[in-house]
Length: 193
Image 1 (cartoon, rainbow, N blue to C red):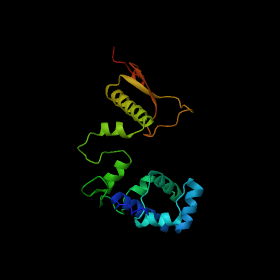
Image 2: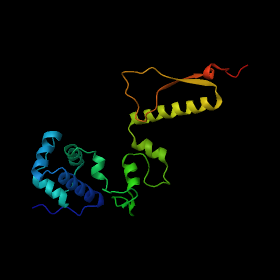
Image 3: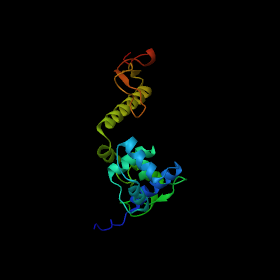
Image 4: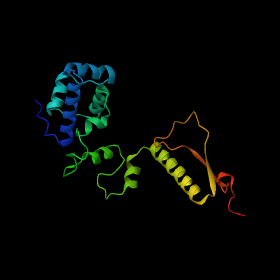
């Protein structure tokens, strides 16, 4: 006979609470969620397993987390994030000794900031973001810097690049731009007169 699983930490408790909250809010029972999980996510947790997850008797694997998020129609982050009604509510998460602001946890889960404001963000982003996001960030930063330099010194123009139907817009919402060094700004002098 297998022994009882060890006590769960605050994040596991949060996941259990969020599964229960979302399941009851959607007015589905354990069996219905189990069936939905199989139908829409292709993942299997029986009704007893879901009840045990909610009571903290069963741990949630990463695959369980993803499948439950799909079945419940939410982001996996929603299951990991302590549920709060107001911003700046202190919450507990595994790995952090003291309660921390919910807004900090949310932006950390999105990889938009470090947990500790004294930690260096660039290293965190390089380690956390997928390569495609780093490329998009670099493009957005580059276009913004070119625009600032052009506006400040009037030494070049920035023109939007023609849309590329093969490329989706970047996640930072920055338009692609082409930099034309030395081109006059707004048809004016290039400063060499």
